[in-house]
Image (cartoon, rainbow, N blue to C red; front, side, top):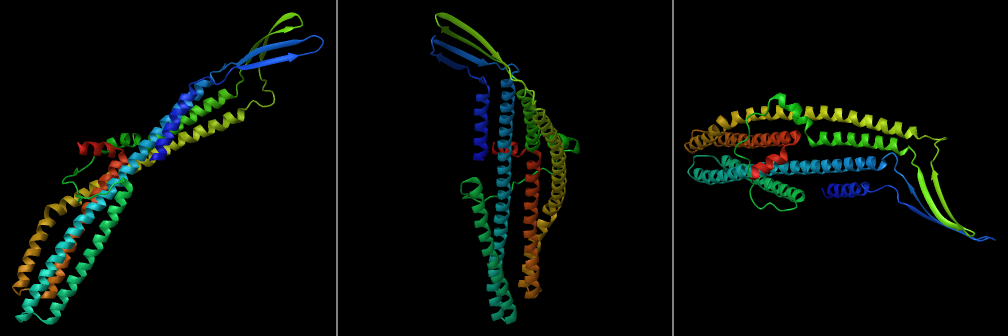
Length: 366
């Protein structure tokens, strides 16, 4: 980011320099001492006959626009990285909460199993199975805490600041995205495409400047002096003759580079259109699956876990089946968190692909 900002500052400085005249006047002096002394003082100026300064200013203006577009793209990419990291943080937080709940539930199961063993309701292997399951859950919980530390570290590296609070997913995201008719315009307005267009403009400006630079500019001079006892005034004009090399090859090369830049614009437009289309389809698909899961599965899972524990405590389900079904239920809840994370990831990908991520963040902040 700092490098992109420095490049933009350098481009501004070049633009200011390009607005100044290309050629400075030259001062000359001549002294000759023979039988008759002679001296002369003159000044000469190369005239920008073909307005080369304007072509250089156009290059500098195009370079500045490209540098600013690259800076905007860097900001977008950095924001996308932060948003993706926030999504991973939120997923780890929710998964960690479920893992803690699993550990607490299994700890209660172990305590209750010990009492039921003393009462003769279950066998020692069933108690041992409960303890092993609780130990496994505790290890998974410790691993998730390690993941949380890693994700916070990555966030700090990106944001330059620590995150000392729990991140949660937004309560609501759009259920569907814009119609396909809007996709083409969104792709064209993306900073990546804009950067390619500005690169093509810069290539065209350099081609025009190369064509002007090969044209010769006259140099006009005037000198005042004395030759013997007489005053002398002389006027001179010189024009380079491009007889051996007219530098047309440089113009042809610049023209080919401009044509290549135009083709890169078309290629970038097609690639960005494909990215926007894929991001839209992915989000809409994930949103439909998430809506179905959140509407029914989440509630039924909580009821199932509660009913399952009642059945086990009543002796209607043996310990092995209870622990297996409990694990499956909690694993399904964790899968729901992963699905929610996929929805957030698809949403951030859509915002990144359309170039609207920074706008959405500003609106969300307000």
